[in-house]
Length: 192
Image (cartoon, helix red, strand yellow):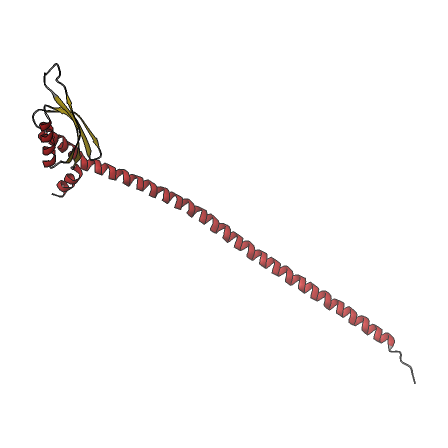
């Protein structure tokens, strides 16, 4: 019987299988590296695209913030202008009132009373003057109280001065406070 040596055949088969395994292992490693490379390129592309979108959105946000700041500045300017317009309108409405107040001061002034100074602080009038007697000051206060444009007379001071060398009479120096009713009257006249 012939003898067949199977050992070299098995060694060759083993070597061939080992080569096939290393080829398959190399192919798998190559495919894995290719998949990793493709996925890396794909993810980098997605990240770059999202970065571009974020930069575009940030630039739009910056432009909108600038426009919002301009709008806020314009609204502040508008509020300041409206406040100025309101002040001008109040001055326009009160302009004829001061004329009526001076006219009313003349009509409420009794004989023997002389005005030296009239000051206005808001609606409050400070009237300083001199009168021939205290009764003339009382008459002035009654006339102010009856007036349509003046009201709430309040006597602050009455000082009786001695006779002066010029006139030879005694004079009463007085300070009267009154309220100007110009704002109420002006509004009522504007309605009529």
